[in-house]
Length: 235
Ligand SMILES: Nc1ncnc2c1ncn2[C@@H]1O[C@H](COP(=O)(O)OP(=O)(O)OP(=O)(O)O)[C@@H](O)[C@H]1O
Image (tube, rainbow, N blue to C red; front, side, top):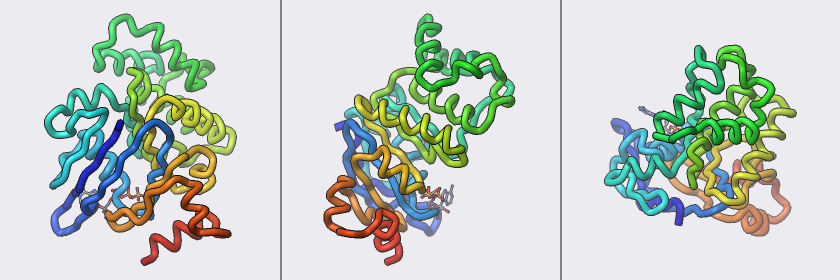
């Protein structure tokens, strides 16, 4: 199993942002949905070892997030919600920098491959600060997949992209999901329908649904994913 979370909990002060959630994920694209403030980003930050959990456990590719954080990070690629990038760096320079962090030797070939895969070719000689939002997202994705991790955690990777950019990024996520485990947070139901095999809906830190997209639809016959989401998150 690529990801396993058991009773994973995060408390900020008085607030339980993530309340004892259990889930597993393997190869494919898992849609991680929930209203604003539901606990999606917090869960992602714990799985990627950015913040410690309050209680419970989780493992990535069999490595414990507390005891083996370096192994977790070797096996995980993370695109955070705000996609923080060094805007003064050139695209290739930023990828070489990330390759260095991962201790990759002679990364030029892999950098060229990832530039091709993410469609960054035409913009590869620009500074990140000169890129459009869609191309910045592609740089974020390129950085996340550079070390060829088995697990990808993508926090709203397509927010704010135009329809053309959306199609390209979704195709890339679908392609990557054939061999990798992807956890994808999004508010766009159309996107879930387009790329996800499985769906977790989280509400107020608690899992309200954990199912395949097909079974979720079969159980709620005739309802759109949007109405299912609204029904489950307004309780
Ligand atoms: N550093 C923090 N300190 C205190 N509370 C926090 C912190 N980070 C998040 N929270 C709170 O935890 C809850 C869950 O936040 P989180 O960012 O995980 O939600 P989310 O599902 O990702 O929301 P969105 O869809 O708006 O990005 C929210 O109520 C938020 O205000």
